[in-house]
Length: 257
Image (cartoon, rainbow, N blue to C red; front, side, top):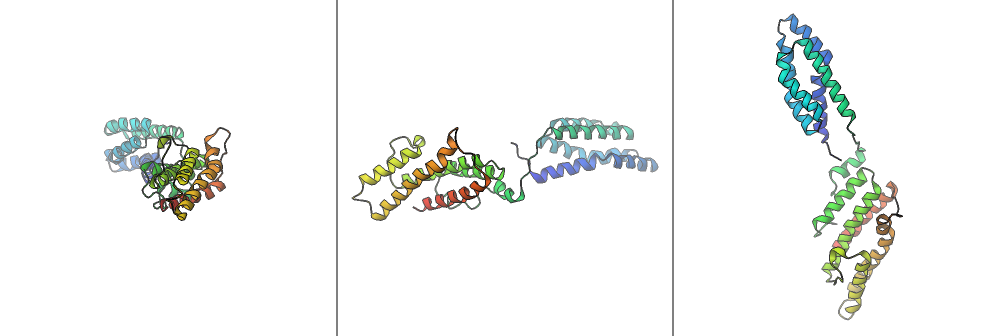
């Protein structure tokens, strides 16, 4: 999905509406004839066309951009009635092309999530690789666009990254390459590290390892497995309202353990 900046889109539509106002042009024609200045209408239209062409290319509205480009090169040689006819044709081109574009509307309450996806996640993402930030950003945008199951998938990916980097900080030995370590394997690696170092780990350190291992096991069955298998769950808005802050809170806790 291509993202169109709202201010730019509004400016483009406003310019098009102003330049392609046939009734206004017809009034200008009458006015121009009255003052014996038929060039005035084409000059007024010409002022808008370069900016409209550029906006159509950026949006993109390629068919309208081509039509504007041709119009721009011919406008000075057109009669007032030809101008009015060309404007009507250009307006029709624009309407047909706009009908072929799907516009997505964001509820104002979700707009902040889309535009500022990492807001509030600063502590949770401390010292984590860029992948975690990328997944949190995607999770926020999926939530904003009401793709709730996709949101949970990205939250689980970000959480997995936090679990693995907790293990790295606590000198856990991975039996497999870290990128290929599953949640279950990670839980087993933590257990083996705990058991092998019982005499050197403090009670507080053992308690932290037990807590994180339990979290991995529970959340693997509660969230992770349900979004990675074909028979999994489709999440609702209400569920994500609870899961989203829970993941952020847990990742913040992991960053400080």
